[in-house]
Image 1 (tube, rainbow, N blue to C red):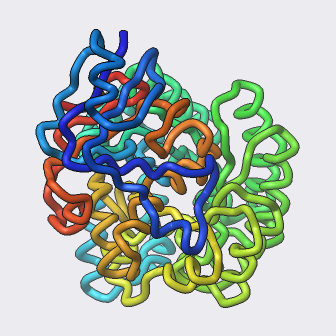
Image 2 (cartoon, rainbow, N blue to C red):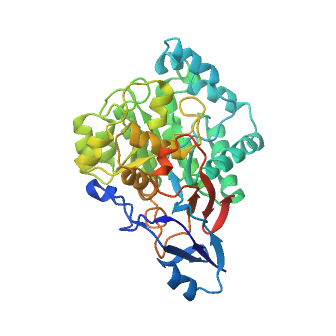
Image 3 (cartoon, one colour):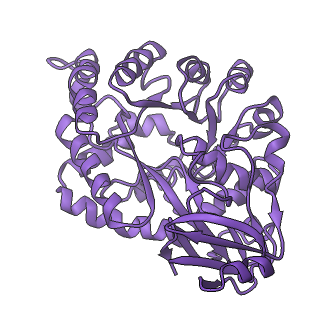
Length: 416
């Protein structure tokens, strides 16, 4: 069945090469007026003047955009949506002066989510995750990466990834699974008889091979940060992941500069994420590499940190920049992707065009999907979002508001 989207005030096509955009390329979201979009079997087959497409596809099912703005479906390339209870108490602890790493050392933070997730069944976790993803879709997200990482044991990491596999068949959204067994060192591996080295060996020799054998993840990720995983440990763990066919991602230079961005570039990671504390050499390394710099402005906002990632320096230096929500229970409990566009403009000093590119085609590139989604062009997946605004600049302008009217993945409705 053919579908034809008509009567949009603007269509944000993001048309261009099927790869991450860099530098001046990021400014041009290729916004068109008087434009319609035709799709068949879940793929876009034509983008052009509405009068022409209405004539050509006269028998297509009409989708009336009613004067809204049609964009590529938003691509949220960094989330931690598989968890149990929230961690609202930590927000108050931070307000009293405790820092992220201090809370973690006291058994809070990630460790709190680990203790909780281990008590829950696969069915419970699935039932909790399903409405979260539907809320993500209600803000215009049609592709989402989901990480494990709150299990930190073989059985619990596999359980989390199996939940993600179930979600892939339960929802029309495109869901990309990432193994994050190296999210932290579990508490039980911090003193004899089990040690840090034992857990790293477990990751290398049991967890990664099992995840790969069961085809439960596309990517392996790691929290490379002073006090969590060192550069040498990161190189070793990601080397094992690559040997088993997993693509690489890094949580890099979030709280302190450590050389993680440079390591991501060296390893050919698909993305280096966070980067609020990236150094000038790190910026240069990413600019010279194919690694996408994924910025998570909601996290720094929620943590009350005064410093955001240096988006302007990264873009002006030639790096490919994406943005994402970092949706998680402790440091970014939001499913509101358009709010990240607001922060990209107001806090990261990105233009609206740059923010739109970062949320679509560059987010797709951060998941290795830039040839499939992230732009409205023939041959691309019919992943679309319709916003109740008259001008694309209003999407980040109405901050915090839910302006997404409808969204589609592969031409099927995700929301509305």
